[in-house]
Amino acid sequence: MKKNKTGCDLKSCFLCRLSLKEWIPAVDANRKTFHFKKGELIFKEGDKVKGIYFIYKGIVKVHKKWGDEKELIVRIAKDGDIVGHRGLGSNAYYPISGTALEATTVCFIDLDFFQSTLKVNHEFLYQLMMFFADELQESERRMRNLAHMPVKGRVLQALLTLQTKFGVSEKGFINIALSKQDLASFVGATYESVFRIMNELIESGIIETVGKNIKIKNENF
Image 1 (tube, helix red, strand yellow):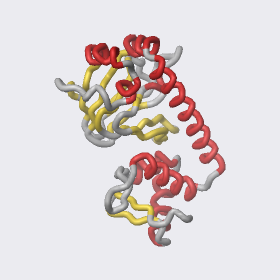
Image 2 (cartoon, one colour; image 1 turned 180 degrees about the vertical axis):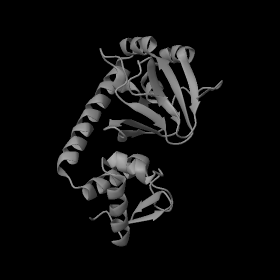
Image 3 (cartoon, rainbow, N blue to C red; image 1 turned 180 degrees about the horizontal axis):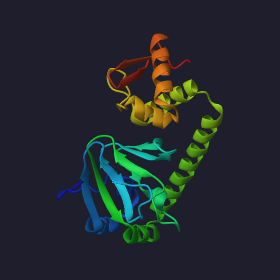
Image 4 (cartoon, helix red, strand yellow; image 1 turned 90 degrees about the horizontal axis):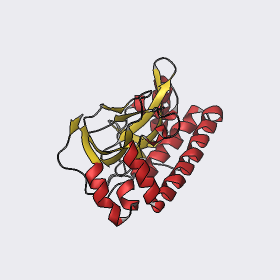
């Protein structure tokens, strides 16, 4: 982690977009900007919550321990997104970890100032509440799929979710390059199962891969 002297543009992230214009100078005075290398831990499961992070540039996987040596990716965040908010509440410890999937720049807002922001900025508070509601619905859907959907269906659903969130390149590839291990953690399956299913999807012409890049060629599966 490296502290940056220059910060974000104060208009792109979830916080700045929804805060009162009069509040932005206070955000500027209270923010800290950090740069993380690919693979670097931003915050760790079990650590005490000291504040909230807003992604200025980069991609972050939000993950938690799943068994002794496995992890489950619960969310993948991009430019403008909020991370670390799952630690809010009476039990002020992060229930998840955040790791940079590529070189990432974040703005850090300490907990006291974040709570003051909630009290002053009603639109931000409302949109954050709606965001929590959407996250809860998504978490419930994913838990249902883990219990009832076969791994192949979960892989296809995960690819569609990533395509919707990150879009596609000019050549039609999803604008995020995940390793098969990270894809398996996002799906909630073993690496071996995902590797086998990806090969099946390639052979059947449903997807195409070039390195870590994936293109969905046929969505009518």
